[in-house]
Length: 169
Image 1 (cartoon, one colour):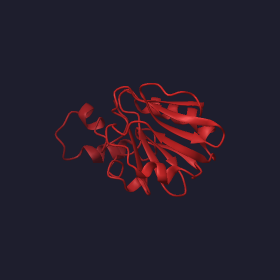
Image 2 (cartoon, helix red, strand yellow):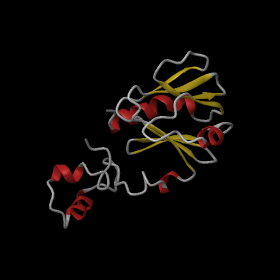
Image 3 (cartoon, one colour):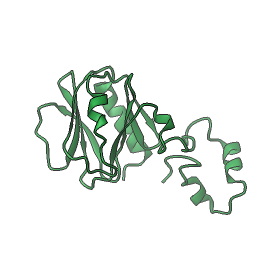
Image 4 (spheres, one colour):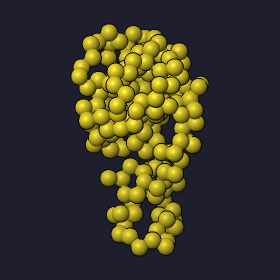
């Protein structure tokens, strides 16, 4: 399963190819992922310019002026930058075709990943209650001390709780 470092590596790998690129088309071959890919994804993302690629926890965001596509790699998902006309394989579920002639291809053999759309991703139910990033200034000894008060749980279970801190194990 891709963990936080692998998701950050994916973000860094696709950002130079995608930022400030216009989305010419979105091709969804199979909507049956962890949650069904919403019909609005293609309509909202096509024609937009990708302003930034961000990561929050294990989610990636393709930010546009209209909102953000929210991606999760699940257990077996991966992202590749390819030529737009490259034939799709059996497990290639989503392509985001760019004005540059390249495309972002999402492959997920087990289909535990997800593609969602949010106008304000920070308010999305999957994101809004997440704890701080483990390497951020918000996660320090004082924060961990306060977060552990009133709980009767082993420290390992505490730090693996995404509401306390994201991306740990």
